[in-house]
Length: 206
Image 1 (cartoon, rainbow, N blue to C red):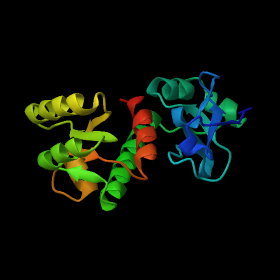
Image 2 (cartoon, one colour):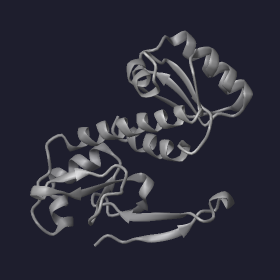
Image 3 (spheres, rainbow, N blue to C red):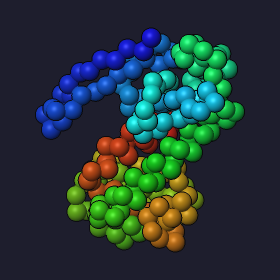
Image 4 (cartoon, one colour):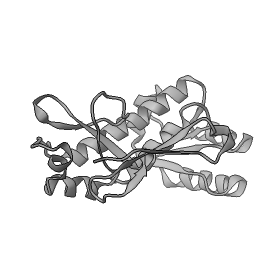
């Protein structure tokens, strides 16, 4: 039966937050929810992802990892956790990846509307010089020379900064209200933590 424990964050700025932990049905390990995917049982006893972990009902938790999801489905671990036969859709891991991708892009869109994303090579370069960024955004199909220049600038000024590089220029443009986006910088704001958690989970499916 899934367990739930809370422990306080050591970061004083987040002292009022708690890290919630759940047990992964694949490994049996108790992990931070930020490392797990929540799934719920919907109509017709079908399992489907609850990426935002907000839907009502008892959740089933599995590590944010393609192998974990596919193995859990193959071995009937969703049935075991639910205590009855449930329907696991084919391509569940692909479905989770698609939903994580959509969530990450949506969070970038929210940050853009809040004025917390600098778009384009020149704007990204200026933002990188102005202050430490939360994330750099790079289209996977962008030219290498621009990426290398911003890599060098970032490394010289700030050291290692996470790069979200798994989206196409078209995907980024659609999310950010442009025709096409190759370079961007997420400077900070309310969406940073959720975006980081989502990107961390997405990495397990790519």
